[in-house]
Image 1 (tube, rainbow, N blue to C red):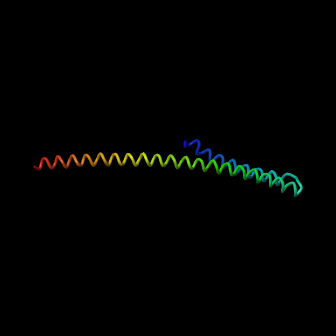
Image 2 (cartoon, rainbow, N blue to C red):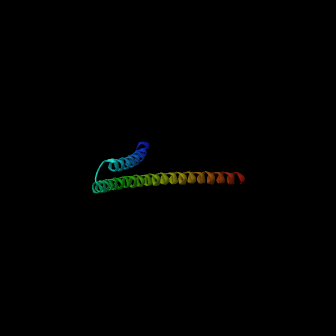
Length: 104
């Protein structure tokens, strides 16, 4: 996940919060009957609930991608450590053979 995509989640969250605040203020300060105001608030609430679900799903997908990338990195790093360890063990074995041969 690149930096631009990560900051997009923050932007979407900010946009969501701004939309919620703006919609609430618009409904509260627009002259309506109590019933009309409640209906508009309900509609806005439902709309914002849908947006929240969409954002939640996007964040979940981004998190799953991140987990997969971290797993890949850990597997690659683990393999590198194993390879380096095997190489050092071979070097040590060769040194032991050389020392033993010199001692005889």
